[in-house]
Image (cartoon, rainbow, N blue to C red):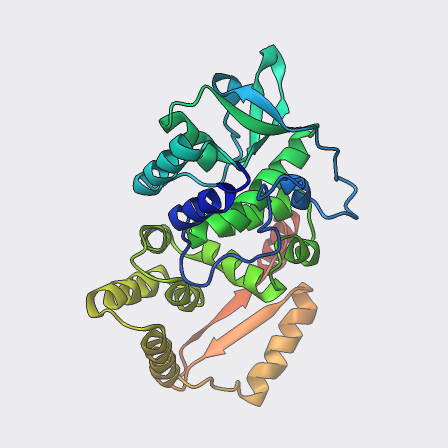
Length: 312
């Protein structure tokens, strides 16, 4: 069996080819060998590190998927290829599970292998059983998927966000766990500021991560979608998009009217009004004498106070 193991792992690697750039190697040994493979899920100095049981075989029908799984789509062709490899050699890389009620197990890591094993019509599969809390399970499942699966950038961004918010992990600690720089994590998180139509194009693979980063710097939805359509229609490179956005920003800056300073006597009146009403006052005025006075208030009570002063 040991002689066949490299071939099987090669087959799995072929069927799990990721996009250009990869997702990091910090936890790439996860479930990769019997020594034991999934011990790399949690760093040695982590308080959440848990003892792993001996390898055992589990009835595949008793394994329930992880509801916290960030990946929502699995490529059918790649699954079929992995299933064929498993059918020929068996499942070499165990999945990782935890015990739940009614004699069932809940999957922590290895959903792709579980799906392929079902396609290969296996009745039992090798598994490591972890004693994990819900929070530890969520953390391990998210990190395992970020490191091992070909998630699209939006799924990766959502996984990072969940780790930060739900698992209460600091960004610098998250960077260490997934072997990424803080700037890389920040760039992924910025994708969540994209408007839905743009995010959908990222998920569909119509634009790259590089394009998405450029679009995330634009706050206006109409501008985002207009540039998105232009990228797709003209097959623009990231460099071309960067130049286009720079040009649009220059043109927009030129079109902005110059800010006109208030005459001295207007400034005197503005300061006097601030003292009288004890709140912020702003006066805007154009060259032809048109303008407005903005009176700020921070609560209903303050609004009533200002109104009463105006009515005196």
